[in-house]
Length: 356
Image: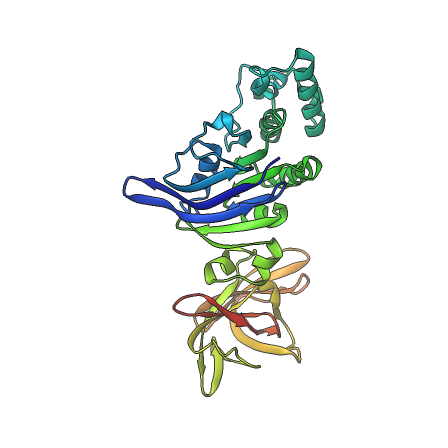
């Protein structure tokens, strides 16, 4: 196992800079997930760690060694790709053991590693099958097994679940998390799916336009986003954002008054954020700091709760109601946020100003 350090890491393609001098320390045995929209630089960063992309600037360390110019095979890392990259003419056992064919291990040691990986991944009964006879989830396990048998210092995963259906993705998230808990190997995992990031990561790295916006645990990013982008990217459904104003007469958002002490940093135009699960339909509680009145534009009954889409002063907002309550589309209802659930952002810089 090994720690990974990125110091001012840069990637340029001609005159275009894809990664802008990022710094990141990944501890030995840590599960770190890089998230962000397409084109944010997360996969490029992963490929630089793997040695599949040249580094234009900065320093990359794996363990105590600078590996900027090392070939991929010299870095002692294993990568699992989005498209599995397994060989259709080989059996499951042959695919898993492919990376060992040039090693100095004895035939018995190679077979022992293949058997152990297959046992951990639930592939023991499939070792003689070919990939065409496997499901998508089983093929992904084969790709992971091929990485495992090499006993790498770190695993790199590049959107490995994006080709699976929703049920398989959920299952594979748990399996990869359990695998990490069992092996304790450093994992760097790239995804655009914030649910994968929230449920799997020790720490999440939020990227945008080749820059790192915030690094923290899933709870830290959910509770204390540093800007609007992170606030909306982390959490599902996304955080509601409503334009507001702070003046000598007080603060408002969506035409409703905000109660309580506004942070001193909040002046003039602001954005007021509240997560859908914190904006509750029904009677107004005593500790409510903001109560919207809006028109129901759509409802999504989910069983345990109902997502209620509201039009509030021309802004689309999502609130929640208990599962048995399904408001009529077109009706006018109230939705309130309790103390501690509001996030305030500067309207121009979109940086966080505090909570209320």
